[in-house]
Length: 136
Image (cartoon, rainbow, N blue to C red):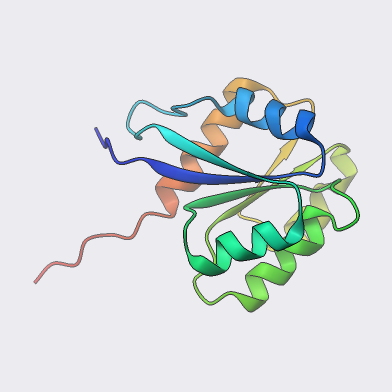
């Protein structure tokens, strides 16, 4: 089991949305992952600073955030940050899943968040984002 902590950035202009995301995922999304530490951001500048600094292992962006939504922000980060961390986008409407896919998000979650699905999705993205050890 990995005991290394993972840093997850949660972005929304609404504190209640950030809280719902954090509560759905929990402090340990899977038994084989260490505890997660959350960094909350309510503005784009905070997201850009954290991602650009390379201080987060995963970003979860609210697709409904205002004035800049997580879908457009995901597309910007994926195209402008060389070592962009994996990004999960949350959407309110099932019909918006295609937009989240267009944004190059690594995964999409739909509100209302199901805790089991949210934790499994985040755990899968964190596992996939691990850099394999180099032999030799």
